[in-house]
Length: 429
Image (cartoon, rainbow, N blue to C red):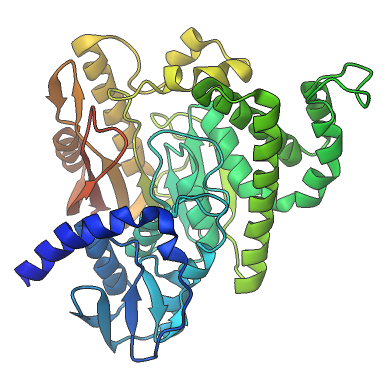
């Protein structure tokens, strides 16, 4: 078994990572029914295998791992249809494609994790959607339950909860995060209005014979009566501004190109809802403070979140162009963010105090015996490793949480400051 795991971790991981751009994740060839549970081809890492097994266990499945850890033999299950609808890491259940495998076909990007509306806006430090779907299953959340993400960020928890029929309360101090999370989950409600305003908006992009009045794109956006449709176009403009600031792309071309893909992605979302007859979760996304949650005691069924890596990444500076466009003063809004205030040891101390308050609030609003999943990693700051994982575990246990799982997770993107995260599963006991 040890040799098999090493092979899975080493050669198989590298081989599949190299295949990323070949769209292997979308191979829809039918498989024989003797393949009872088959992992998706993009499952590369040990933590993913661990989450896949935890998913099955949480759904009451008895299984046996076979064929080099890629296939699972189904020994006993209460509900095969439930597996097909919920599982995140599996491609087929007894020859039938999982809902997740069908959902990821709806992708307008070259990244397997950016299907439907997940790709909208290049937010750093995004969750892996597949992992979030699995964690929602592992924590026992189901249709009609409410999950809280007090650091909603790019809205990944919200989208995945919505797809699973789980209600989501998403809170963030950043107005940019709130806006993109709303757009990703609410635009499906107003696609006709979005299409209705497309011509009016696009003709404002460049001065032309069709825009003799000299009106701007903002003038047109502000005329949109429906708030959800208005937010969609505000987001489309911010995506183009980001492309211009980060990639040097000409604004009008970037806007027109991104707008087409955004509308197509919303349309894809609606199509998959109809195809799979999904009953969506209700979304409530708002600006707020994780240190003072506007919630009653023991009112939440589960928590899935990732606190900001502010020590490693300055979120205010990173999204300065978008925040300025939204009309915010950077120096003022910085005082509201977790972990970006102060310098040196003071910055670390302030971050830790903010995290204490946030953990206390999570404990207060979570129902007894329910779970809080916190994805977090140690960062390097001023040449020293900041032991955020250890700090989080120690303080969470001090206030009454019990750590029931600690899973190492390799990450990409922030290699200069961190190389892995930990998936910490706490239970309120």
